[in-house]
Length: 573
Image 1 (cartoon, one colour):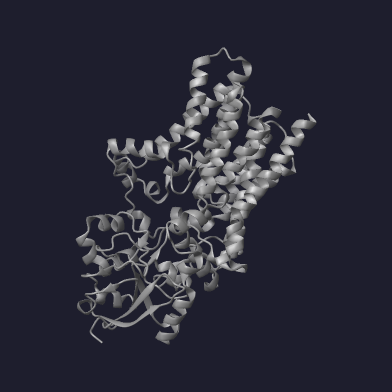
Image 2 (cartoon, helix red, strand yellow; image 1 turned 135 degrees about the vertical axis):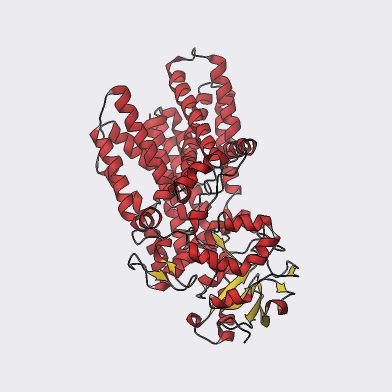
């Protein structure tokens, strides 16, 4: 017994060391660290700063943020009960980001450890698998602004299962009460709570057990989320004003393409809930499945318990991928056209449960192989080691440095945009700008008022007004036209020649030969300046005058500042 406790303690210390090592670039490099850009620096991080500087964190339900699209609804941003919003309010953006990463990964490790130890792998010999799998789960490259929406699921499930078994204490209820303040209802927890509801219903139907404590815990957490995220619920469910999501056309895949999407999701995963399970975990599942099939039911009670759990989890895993893929099957669209909520709310996100399922399944598969003893014991720990190598190799600092993407500091290039502000010599609130070949979040982060944006939803009327500015480019490119008309989350000044490339650095060697840009429509929205990452050869034709070129050795951007010759009244100035 003491020997196993000693080994477990050593493994826990080693896991904590590796977790600190994984997080160290964020704290040691600070703003020079490389972090995810897609759906992170190009959006959420800038949103927190815009909200902070707007003074509208506690704004009323009908408040607007004038810095974005002449008045973006306050409800588009995070709610005031979200602790991540306050981290970004009180701390510099990069510091808040690093602390948030540490919080989420520590809770993820602790939650998976408690779940596996008390409800899945109860044997002492499984302690190293429990610790190793928990560490692997905590190192997955989760979507940063999702917070505990996916990586917090194990600790909530641990709390629910304890309550289900009649072991409810202050610890379990504290988890249920605290996690909603650091997670998102629509980005994971809604789907998790639906699963918890199914568990309660299963107990009711099969065992005739009402379990009022478990039902109370589920309803309490659901109600708490509803109160915390009241802004989002009022905006997407109860409001009568149409938003950009009302034109969201997601279900357009043919049946063969839907099957391909299912296979891709099952084998590789999804960008927002990356599990990195393809190289190591999938083969482990295969070995475990083959072993269970070969032995049948002759393996004893231990095998039978793991066999049932393995089959159930693997089936659930496949069903979640299938649901995700078939949500985009074109056969759904007629129903979505009739029920607006099916467009405005992404029910495909049940697959956000997959990280939890995949790593519990990984632990179960390793435990099955460990029972074979002999060379399989070494194989099990080798697999854990290899999976850790995969996860460390996908550390943001490694991945984005190799891809030569800008660091946090380089991406926002505060000093360069300060030069632009000084050159214009007007209060930022007195003029509007848009970006070309550059994410508008960069200008927004630096305090500029922008007519373009990237947001989950915004007024549909504004989307139609902005479309007039880029109509010519959309007509050139069916791809961009569908991208904007059938989604429109990125309300950008598109160019067919650039496509969806918004990271054009100063050494890209690219320019726009012929931009179809409606300067009159731009001016009617209040537009005065374009900041472009590339030279626009047809600027004169578009009533644009090149004011100055800005560049700096410390910035990856070369900014061409254009001013429109069209007055706000719609005529030439």
